[in-house]
Image (cartoon, one colour):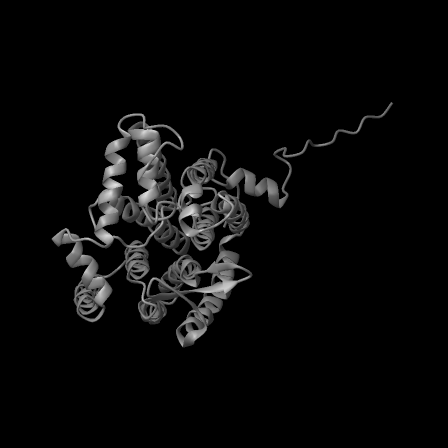
Length: 384
């Protein structure tokens, strides 16, 4: 009687693309991302019904249902991007970047949807897409690759090319206008530049240019000037939202008032988006807030540790820039909720309601996972 041994599925001899991904992906980062998405769905149930009533929707679960749809799309995009190798991550980023440039120009010539005095969105099948959310991570990947070319072709002006792409993108952001996203992209670009070996003269130029641009925006954009002056003068307007967020955080105490029992969210216009953290603090308390902050901190630290271990210069610099995008956006949102800075209209990654934000965050973390695959994982497969 003959016996034929067959290798079990997912055995070490299995070299399929799925097994290679399973062995090299950072499951710690992936698990924390799923945890944040689950928290976002829970908080959408807490803040969504009140927001639906405030906006006049008949279905109180309008926002939670849409958030579930956005979360599914974000997870699919994150997992799909994480499957890419480093070459395909760059190729896909180039294609998406060109598409975003076209859409950003289309918005500026009048084809976009305007809301709250800004024209940043495109309406598609009843949904709003913000191209800048996609443009940020793909520009960082392209910049990381361009800057890495100096190792093989040191006589080329790769820094200038990367800076031109960056300047064009930030210019399109500012014309919308979107100062918050411009600042976020600038910091991530500088980190990418620094990790790739930023000369001191470039650092000085960025610092001087940033100060000059900040002063120019303060002088030319009334809404920027009003937010900053209103924040420091403790006036009504946007600052009233910060006051209500502080009230919600203080009311929550150690364990919160209970799911669905929060009251401040009914008087907080952006409770399901920019100020979802305040809603969580009120209903679930300081303990839940500390857990959330711990997950964000661990994800960011683990991401930077994994990127630091990457030998490839392009992947190392781009991954550091992508984790900066993710971490700085979370830090800005939390700082607004804690009344440390003026409102920026920036969501809490994976937690706040929003389709563009969910897709952009999913793409950011998916590309980062693709670039650090094999670094910091329990088993390191062949990857390059």
